[in-house]
Image 1 (spheres, rainbow, N blue to C red):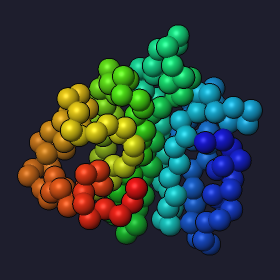
Image 2 (cartoon, rainbow, N blue to C red; image 1 turned 90 degrees about the horizontal axis):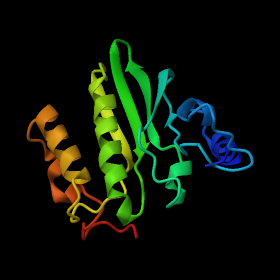
Image 3 (cartoon, rainbow, N blue to C red; image 1 turned 135 degrees about the vertical axis):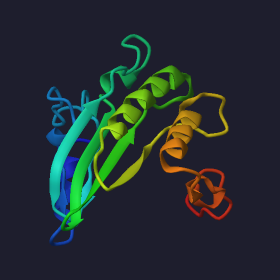
Image 4 (cartoon, one colour; image 1 turned 90 degrees about the vertical axis):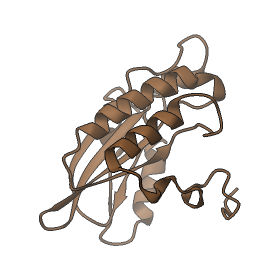
Length: 174
């Protein structure tokens, strides 16, 4: 996303909503005016006041000589909300390396993401993003995330296929 994209979305928000800016969820080297290089493309919109904003740039970004992935500074953005006094919610948004052959980078980015999630001290944690992986593939990204979440949360309903988008016959989005 470019700065103009963020501004377009910000202008369309209903009254009382706020949104993170380009610079808040990106590396300091992100320009976002001339080109998207070194920008994460992440944003969080909330109707609750944003109390804290953090950005973790992933350690591994792709191969400089092989694909454009190197120039994208993917990471995880985290904001803290307090929708009810005394109750906090950390909202984390992420986007992992795309294209099938980038599985090595996705797996390492997942390790960084899980470290980020472990630092949350909020009462509730919401994680959303584009993991860029098909759970039917043989790479470890999806299995690692699901195992860590199951270990942290116990056996919960989020593993039920009816909550999935990919491969869910009731999903109308294509």
